[in-house]
Amino acid sequence: MTTNALITGWGMYVPSRVMTNDDLAKIVDTSDEWIVSRTGIHERRIAADDETTTTLSVNASRDALAVAGVEPGEVDLIVLGTCSPDYPLPATSTTVARDLGATNAAAFDLQAACSGFVYAMATANAFVRSGMYRNVLVIGVEVLSRFMNWKDRNTCVLFGDGAGAVLVQASDRPGGMSGFHLFADGTGFEGIIVPAGGSACPATPQTVADGLHTVHMAGRDVYKYATRQLAESALAAVRDAGLTMDDIDQFVFHQANLRIIENVAKQLDMPMEKTYINIEKYGNTSAASVPMALVEAVAAGRIKPGDQVLMVAFGAGFTAAAAVVEWTADPARAFLAPGSQTRLGRPQRQLEEAAV
Ligand code: UT7
Image 1 (tube, rainbow, N blue to C red):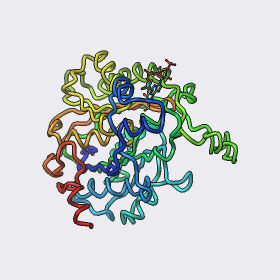
Image 2 (image 1 turned 45 degrees about the vertical axis):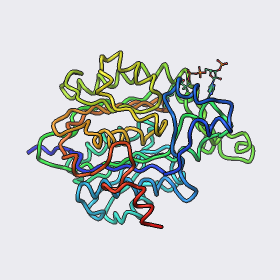
Image 3 (image 1 turned 180 degrees about the vertical axis):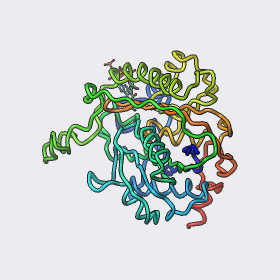
Image 4 (image 1 turned 135 degrees about the horizontal axis):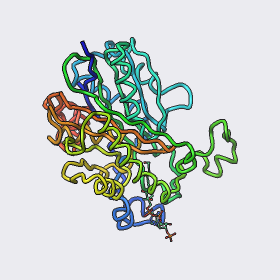
């Protein structure tokens, strides 16, 4: 009997603090008009002082497990995609396991920058299909606000914080993950880089003074590479699934720049009404952007059982990744209201009121 890897639970979490383009215009030389016209971003979420990559992950994961009806102790493996971990050492997935109570889970982090979640989905698929694990929790999460140079308008206007999680389960039911394309080209490693704090350039008072522990990006070069590679990876994954682009019901792209998504949609003849967009609310949340868009697309009724969903991402490295998933779960399992952050049907607002 074939073992398939199905998505049975999903959840997301974003911090409640909103930073608008006008807020940014007070700290760097920029404007709402420039940011919206070049990127499509209107606002982004910024983690509170007491929030970390672990806490965001745990909030998203609790929802994903509750939707799947799986207890933390039943999770076999946690694969966490991030480039903004709590610490260089140990892996954030281990503190997520601790705080979730996933006491029987193996856990590791996966660093493929913005492509991290889709790489992690391919990893989960391989573990499940090999028969090694049955319940794999996959997380895409970033607290990039802690890695920003808030004086650099080239980067600080782009990124935001958030988390998305799915539970991938072994099943003999048809559907689930069917096609992949994973890509890396290290010749582009300087395109998006945190130059200091690693073995190539250890942290010193000078590197800190020079802001070398923050994200640097050659935006225009990345833009050109991303638009070409996203289209190639999308096509390769669809081919790998034995499908054509016409078979795809919903496109869930990494939300780095609305212009990039529109450009790729044009190359692929992909109708914009089949393309879920939420960059205006969250900016570029790197590894969290694909799962957050997936969760919202399901909540908005854009993804139904039987639909073929194509997820595609591009990021630092350069890396790219694409995956095709036949959606099988009943969206009503999570009563997420479109566009609003919820916790199993209860708007976050209500939860906050209840906590006071
Ligand atoms: O998620 C991982 C992958 N990342 C990406 O895919 C990002 C890819 N790159 C991009 O999305 C775009 O290149 C950006 C949004 C980063 C930049 O847009 P652009 O249209 O490529 O602008 P640019 O970098 O070519 O800069 C155009 C001008 C420059 O001024 P000059 O040299 O023409 O006088 C910049 O200094 O815009 C200036 N500029 C800004 N002006 C106002 C750059 N950032 C800002 C800003 N506000 N925030």
